[in-house]
Length: 218
Image (cartoon, rainbow, N blue to C red; front, side):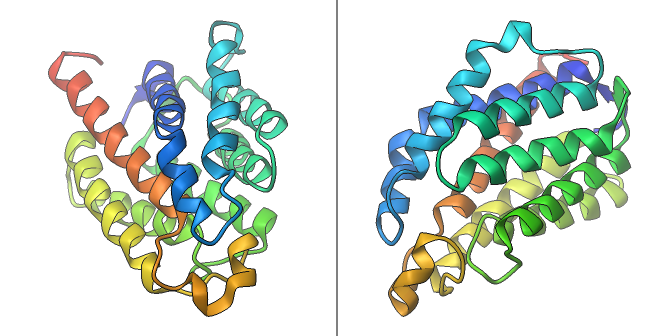
């Protein structure tokens, strides 16, 4: 994970976009249980726009690339998802700054900044049954694995396991934010769509990263 540059960041962002588009119906179906059902559609449209303009994105440095990506996502995704997902990319980009290399510590700092941005924008926190209930534990697991000497491939595989477990665990929570919050106790018994989206995306990133590593990508 250390010393990864623009190529790796592009790989991760493109994978997030492609996974969001491929899972449009699945994420929408999850959201329709207690939400308004537009999460999958909104996410897919935003990332479609990002991938359509992929070659024209400003790649001056990693921070600029992520901030530009976040602005496109924010402007194209409807509802509350756009500002929240866009903010995550923008905050990560602000934390990365003008660099073309990232250490493991920087990657963790970027994920923490993304989570803090989501908390502030969505006025939410852990336990509110949102994507934070997966994103924060995934970041914790990544940090723990990397600090214990795991390489990027191993750390991501471990994080993917945590992502799935924590997303499934939102089933027992009561939603306190978003449209689902209006359903109160009825929101218990179904997973949070945002949390599951983070899990599916993390699993896919782990698969792609592993494939790139085995293929000799640097």
